[in-house]
Image 1 (tube, rainbow, N blue to C red):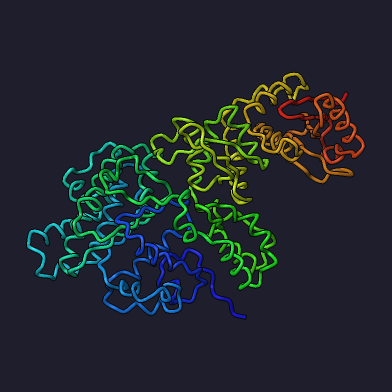
Image 2 (cartoon, helix red, strand yellow):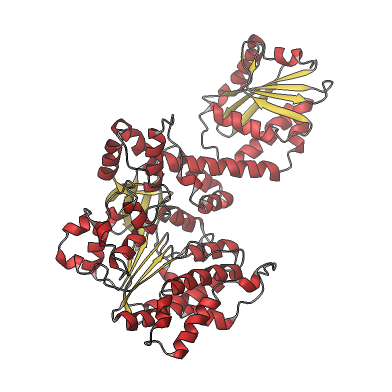
Length: 575
């Protein structure tokens, strides 16, 4: 059987349909939008959950295109919804923009990218300049936007983050969508539909880059003019990751419809429902993989609808058809994951315990507030938990109200997200190893000073996030990681040696210096630490781990038995 191709990175609806990619039909979203008649709808979903494809779908359905595109909806659900919905097809002028590239190292660079996106939409409708329905003054303004949308004057120049952006351009571009709407309405004699994808990306990037106030000021005017004072607006649909209404970028709008992951409406239109994923698995002859797919990519709850991550699911289907041996964490390579890094970086002891508890499969209970803003992200750890929830790194298990506050019981959604936490913790740990002065530890290891060896390890372990305390592999990796900073030595682990596998070997480049063998054990109880150390030393002798070092020419070999219990460590050295 020839299967339909997998739509990896396909977010253009016409390409999706006309080139025969596998498509999970979400066209009834069109019906819902028409029925609900909201003037401004803001959909907030995590990254890579089909927002861009849905925006493209809306464009191809509603836009009054010069060529007939109605055929691409043949056989899809919206065509069975009734004539009153088909009457809207290809009937309206549409402004469609994506702000996902609206970022830069400074406001100036980010603004340049935003100008390019706005200018691109003006060029798409450039036929308006040929109309006598625009005055000469309006045509001049139109050309001004096009001519100033490309940052040609900045090419080859070093960007200065402190250099001011022209007030004239800020004013001109902040009013540009309202102006374009007016022009389109007069040309087509119909009010305009505005579609904006990833509306919050410039705000997120501005927060992490340090020019947040400038970006907020621009978008406050931009959205006010386009969505509030715009008499040419039919309706608007915006998509993003986070609700940012409190930022006042939507100041004065007449009740914009904010559809977050907590809303019961539209739950099935972003992401794959369980039935849709089951159907996809069956289509690709992978029905036996349903349990594995659920463990890795399911678990998101939008309103009352349980969904799969669509991006990861499609990649998983492709991997399994290509006989990959096991699932991979695809989302970790596409989503920013900056928020997880922020949480780990500023975590106090209580938060570290909570992260460990989540990674072990537990839950935590936190107050959830939809109105937090990017500027508040690091003001409190509760805010960070909020961002993790709304961006897809946590899922809701249950909800309760205490006083006037809503508290959610939260958990990690699936194995893919678990992988992201563990990877970010490992990256944080590697950074800490580079940052901290471990000279005392290294000196102790090479001089058999077991008291300092223990103290230094315990101190470092105390500030780490030991998300696998009960697994020997965690402590093995932990100890290997901090010992790898020994200059002039090569640190290896789990190498075949003697009659078994030694845990850690430390080899000096100079054969005359001491080499080290470390065997790691886990104690079930704190008073078993001593016994585990002795067992580790006995294992080194019994398995003759030292023989490999002797064959290489090392004559001075230190043998350590190291045992762990929680964040406790005991070190013993062979006589």
